[in-house]
Length: 410
Ligand SMILES: Cc1cc2nc3c(=O)[nH]c(=O)nc-3n(C[C@H](O)[C@H](O)[C@H](O)COP(=O)(O)OP(=O)(O)OC[C@H]3O[C@@H](n4cnc5c(N)ncnc54)[C@H](O)[C@@H]3O)c2cc1C
Image 1 (cartoon, helix red, strand yellow):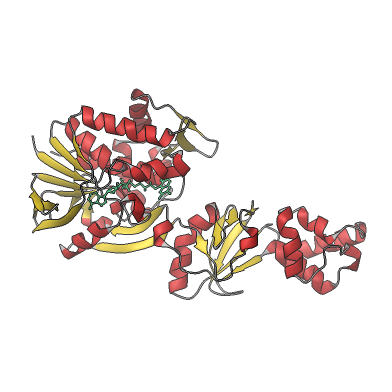
Image 2 (image 1 turned 135 degrees about the horizontal axis):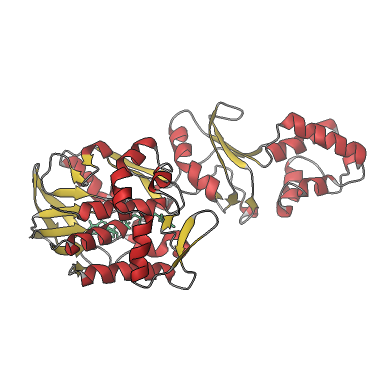
């Protein structure tokens, strides 16, 4: 039986501690916050999208190739079915939405129920939980970690599992500092990088706050009319300072990379047709329905709240009828619908991401055990690893599965 210290009482740490304790080890779980699972509690807007439906292979395919390869063993050892069965035994029932996302049953505090279930499991298995315990340093040199510093005191164990998460939402306890300590100990790391975050714009449209553009595609290019660098087909929603919504979150990492390299420019295409086709459609409509208001035509494709402002932006009056629409006006209307200019993004905030990209390089970790290569008694799991999946329950499943693997100590 080994003495094990797990640092971080989030998704990965709770599962790692529970798993190690069920295997007979003596486990202490150190959590900086006053309570466990703070980020889990705010996940999915408090509803906690705990995993995604599908086979392990299907879930793995949602990650980048390298991340999927790394996660394979863990996703088979502790898949979504095993997670849901475990939670069900603790009274947490779940349901799957049409889009494959799995949530605890819709009732107030459903995310808290997931944390409570994991905490109960861990404590029942014998885990000693310490909250308000922020580790301030790692002591040792490869191949052995000698101790952790907590309130100036050196805590020693036979094995250490680091599950301190990423670096977004630092107010939830995840400040990301352990990555720097690991780097100083010689571990290859990739610096934290913003991901799954809202995108602030240089020229935001605060008057549009709350308006969604649906069913189209957010496009990223190197500049106005420049080379296409990426695209994501999903909704966006305007915020006071820019855009959010699924397409914005999924494209945010690429936007920030482009911003730091060649430059970035965003547009939103509300309809899939090329401008020339839509121009033909509009000309046909002008012939067939000359008295139709230009605004009414636009309302077929764009949210009502936007139409008036957009017409203004295009220099067209609200009472303009199709028959009076000049060629330049027609072109301007088509441009609004086919590719609305959102313009240049500002820096994507690391702190507001659902995950942080970057972390311990996957090549530095044995995917079968989560052991840090070159160390005998040190493991890492969860978002501290260089793993960032898309929105949809993938990131929590990665944290649960890698935590499970890390907890299997020989
Ligand atoms: C707003 C938001 C919504 C999200 N929604 C979803 C969702 O619906 N579905 C999904 O799959 N993912 C979601 N995510 C992502 C998901 O929550 C994380 O990927 C996941 O929680 C990572 O688990 P983890 O255990 O690695 O880290 P965390 O859950 O962040 O846990 C790490 C813990 O370590 C503690 N810690 C850090 N440093 C120290 C230290 N020095 N000493 C002691 N303790 C320390 C922290 O206080 C923290 O509690 C969301 C994230 C956010 C921010």
